[in-house]
Image 1 (cartoon, rainbow, N blue to C red):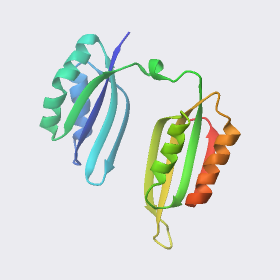
Image 2 (spheres, helix red, strand yellow):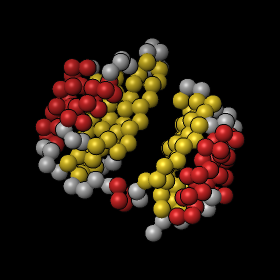
Image 3 (tube, helix red, strand yellow):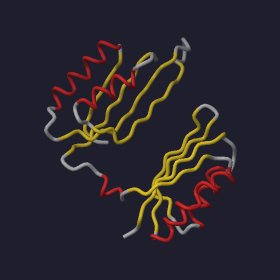
Image 4 (cartoon, one colour):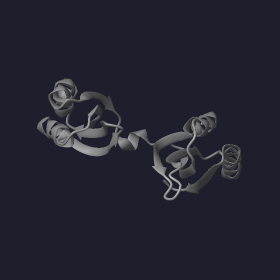
Length: 177
């Protein structure tokens, strides 16, 4: 059974960063299984799940900081569980989408509401874009949730819609991830 580690990297965006980190993983004998990478502002950020033998994970953990420094990144590694071990049992996956004119507090209001109900946020992506005609900032949020099977979905949906009405956010909750 393979071992797993998570790598996180952040640094000024420039060509070659994905190449440098993926080369480091390969040279250690690791396999890049899952990742999220994006430019945020002028910084490139990576979150990578790596698998491999015990020896490969040892090399990844020992060499991450130096490999990051060579690439101009802050690169950290830590052991983690296999994806199948991390899945929350007794939960049902749901997708949450929210759209609004941008204003502070949207993510906090929604995430606090979910946390109070024991709902795990498995993934969350937000984006700010400009409306085509007016140029107004538009905010969008997409989250994948692990909803405990005991949570009444109709009540959850109604409560999220109440937050939407209060904050002027269009909120949609649907089954699936």
